Amino acid sequence: MNKKLLIAIIGIVLALPIITISTIHHSFGNSGLIAKGVYIDKVYVGEMDKIAAAKAVEGKYSIDKLELTHGEKTYEITPQELGFKIDTEKAVGKAYIYGRESVMEYIGSLTGKSLHIKLNSEYSPELVASVVGNISKDIDYSPKDATIRISGGKASFTREADGLEVEKEKLTGMIESVLRYESAEKSMQIPTNVLSAAIKYDQIKGISTVLAAHSTKYNASNAERSENLRVASSSVSGHVVMPGDVFSLNAVTGKRSIQNGYKMAPIIVKGKIEDGLGGGVCQVSTTLYNAVIRTGLDIVERRNHSIPSSYADMGLDATVSYGSIDFKFKNTLKNPVYINIAPYGGTITAQIYGYPEDRRIVKIETQLIEKIERGVETKYDAQLAEGKQRIEDSGRDGFKVKAYRTFIDGSGKKQQLSSDYYPPAKKVIVIGTKKAEAQENQEQTEAAESHTNL
Image (cartoon, rainbow, N blue to C red; front, side, top):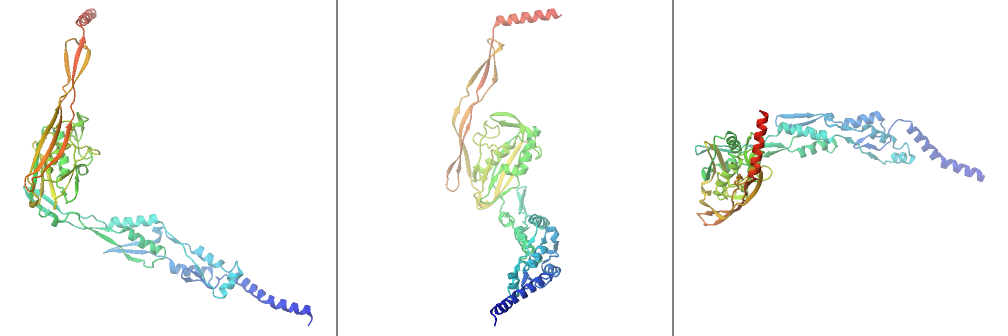
């Protein structure tokens, strides 16, 4: 056989498969169909056109609605409310291109090679959070503590009631798992938590005994200050302090403001008395402090005034100022205590109620450590006649005082409560320096001017 002819025949034989594959690939490219072996997520779309593939994917992965249930309540959520959409067009586009841009990819599809295309979904986490938040507002309710009310020395109680709250984080995860196709469960029970009351009837039912009490006097004719006593006392009275808990007077009374019912009345500011909102609240804290120390409870925070108080012995007052100075005590007993405090007819009384077995006999003492004589400051006034003087400020003496309590029953332990300092204030005397002759000349001049004017 002619050598040239043989080479030509071999070339034709080798070219035939290439020509055949190219012809088939060209035909596939014009077919409008997706190659074999192609999946969009779990949906097989091979040998489908774009429209059929899109319908197949959306039939599998479209979300009509989510149905969330709690008891007799049902919430139907549409995907639009969550900003949900699936990118079917992009996924189908990727599937359609496969095998068209590369002959080798096409050959792979013919030999059984498969391609899995991820179907991406989008949603708004903010909208999901908003929907979950609205559901929570509709379902949630707070627990109610057991309460105690003492009237005429007798206690009456109401029982506690549990609350409920939606587990928002868990519900959010359940919804988002459906939107991400990690779950096919479109009907779900809303997860909730039971909220237990902090104070239960079984814990307070034994409160029946006055553990300690204390009273102080006030001027009932001062209407504004008396109202401040009433407002602060009503905030404090009725509180139950559980074992281990710390009571804060500022946290309970809140900011001394007009909105909270407080009025202008005398307060102490840097050792001076001036009008301010909430004047009188310190008498509430002082009266309560004196009752608390007689129960044996621990004092966490307390500070004395800068001026000795008219309604309490030195060393036994307790000043407060919202945002800076507080009165706090801790219930160190095994059982809860109940606070009852109210002003009436010039006397404000604080009572601490508790279990009978928690009653202690406590003796309170104060000791004057040092009296600091007031200093004297002299000023001179050229308008005041020589030899005359006036007292501008009478000042006051200073004191250092310690307070103690002794547990009469039991151990007989004596405990120092405080070591207080009341700073002195100088007495200010103004002395005249105006000479008698200058004064006489001034008087004559003034008389002459008066005569001329006539």
